[in-house]
Image (tube, rainbow, N blue to C red):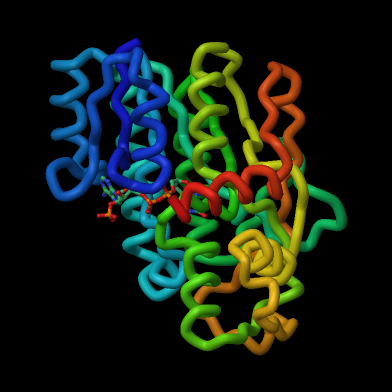
Length: 279
Ligand SMILES: NC(=O)c1ccc[n+]([C@@H]2O[C@H](COP(=O)([O-])OP(=O)(O)OC[C@H]3O[C@@H](n4cnc5c(N)ncnc54)[C@H](OP(=O)(O)O)[C@@H]3O)[C@@H](O)[C@H]2O)c1
């Protein structure tokens, strides 16, 4: 297939590139190419004639989105509108990467693909706008929602926990934010499988199992040989942030399972990532 991949320099994009090695791929990322420039994107697509646009590029700093909701909407909403319009113009399929933050976190069980979307924060609202444009401008699309992404060696939650443990010798971590830690390698593999299916629709790709940030941190410390570092459980109410996260927002994967795509339990994936981090 011929694929345009937005955000190819980001955490997911970098991991997807080797998974797509048998396809012909052109990347779109800052500063060379900008999804908010529709004409530039259209010119590239008219020349390259992609079969598929995979679109993870986004403004992903959730607190930054809360401070500047207009910028969040411009990139995540209207940038996605551009990608969808270009896909429509050249007759290509599209895969949009979205988030569990389109949900409000007030549920009592993991969110299924068909659950009602009601974001609490600017990041979630801008990503929901991206879902809306994808669904309404195209017939042949995948929306893949994911959560709590991390990569080996990346600047993400496991990395920060290890750094803070090394620096302070103790930690405070919230117990009331629940989600699915998801290893970006597993997500990239699942996306590479999904694009072969042409089974268009909405998917929830996360590693299996829901945990609190506190339990996630405990497992990071245990697996990295720091089980003796004390962690104090705290409530998110004591941890001031610009953006309000949905507190209970695990995702349930029904649609992916129906086409044979499931991700392994989060503990197994984390163990592999921590081992790689130490390499
Ligand atoms: N990370 C998570 O925990 C998480 C959870 C749920 C869903 N997601 C979704 O998963 C996707 C991938 O996340 P990620 O962690 O790989 O994000 P990331 O590491 O921040 O990568 C995003 C990439 O998009 C680029 N980008 C931003 N604005 C752009 C623009 N206007 N034009 C072209 N490229 C632009 C970024 O460049 P700069 O770095 O220069 O800005 C970056 O290279 C996103 O759509 C995100 O919403 C992420």
